[in-house]
Structure formats: C-alpha cells, structure tokens
Length: 310
Image: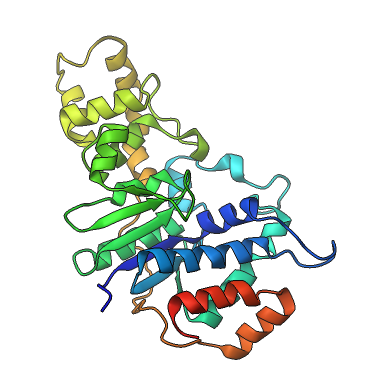
C-alpha cells in the first residue's frame, strides 16, 4: 500500500515552463496551440509516477498580484503588468493565455483537485494547504519559484521539488540540508527572513541596499531571525556598524512591510476539500471532447495511466 503523501503544484510555474519548453507543433497557424497543455499534463504524469502522491492539488493564481501586497510595496510585480491594458493584468503570451482554460478543463475531466482563493496567489493557496495538512501528511511542493523554500520543514516532512534547473524529471529536492548548503540558513523560516533582506528584483522587491544574499544569510544566521536582527539594530548592537548599520537603518521602512509581501499566507480562504487522487475519470464526455478537439489523447492517457484510473 502506498504511503500517504500530499503533492501541491504551483500550476502557473509549471504551465509557463511547459509553454516555453514544449514545441508548438500546430498543424496550421489558425489552430489553437496546446503545447502548454500537453507539457502540463505530461508533468503531472511524471510527478505522479515518480513520487507516488496519494493526494494532489493543482494550486491556482486567483489573483496574480494581490492588492494587500501592492498596498505594502507598490513596485510589487509592476514589470509584469501588460502594457496598454485598461486594467492591471499580467503580461501573458496570447498563445499561452488561450491554453489556460483548456488546462482547467483537463483537470476537471480527470478529477484532479484545483484550488485557489480570491485575492490570493497560488503561493498563498500552497502555504494555506501546507498549514492545514502539516503533521497529517508528508508534503511535496512542486515549483520553479524559490519563494516557496520558506515552507521547508523537515520535522513536518515538508519539502520542495524545485524544477528550475533539472525540470520535473530531475528536480532539486529542497530540504533543510539543501537550504544550509546552498544558502547558509537553517530553516524555511530563516530563508524567508533572508529573502526579505536580500529583496528580489524579479518581483519588484528592493531589499536593503548593500545587503546581498550572502550578507543577508550571515545576518539571519547570526541573530536567528529578522525580528531579532531588528531588535539588535534598534538596541545599538556594536557588532552592527559602519555602512551596514546605515543601510539597515535606512531600510527600516522597507523592512516594516517586506515580510507582508515575501511571506506566503497561511490562512487564505481556500476551500476545505479532500484532495485524494481520483479513483475514476470524473467527466468522460469532457475528456473525449478535449482529446478530439485538441489532439490531447496521448497526454491525457499518460495521466490516466499514472493515476491508475483507466
């Protein structure tokens, strides 16, 4: 009998990877592209086969740029806003945007749980589900985004399968030993604090001037947490001096709000469902239509075979 294990997919991270990594081999230019759909389904088949989860959730961005994060740091993800859009929308290639509803339909047809929360990102859905199932099941978080390293917790058997380098077939398995070896921090909590100090230009987070990743890790390791570091700064700790002290003091207003943006929500209003793997195809008619209209029979069948529901 397979040991219980929950797998949480950072869905957008995976379908963006599929879109840019799988050839667009449409029969003619007017056909709907499905390379991201095929790649996403193949990713699920590979992950289920290789890691044998008993529970699976495709976590969704119901809001890719939540207002509470923008209120805290207005520059958050501004570079990803689609130019000329009358509303604030994420810049997504047209050939990918048309595929997202097909991915949603494929998950529905297969009976794979898809969850998000209005006003929150997929990261927040993942954080909330980790908090909800922590201690009940071992958890694998699948993502190409380092932000989710903050959830790593050996004691609770929470790890990240990081796809940015080796892809879905050979992901980095991120546990606390990985964090210590790669970043010099001991826990997921410390990784989050280090990430606040360091900032992240890809998300529009400035960080503290003059504090790079290595310095941030050393400070968090030395003081244990960002809160303890700030207490030491305010208390005039003589070990913090010169340009480093000036930079940390100048960055105080950023450090007040940085954690609100960097830390994932643990209490987003994600529906409370049982994400056990489907025991049967949920909607055979929809599955047949997707296979016929978009030529998806092969990737769908690979997922069906991996799930053992054919």
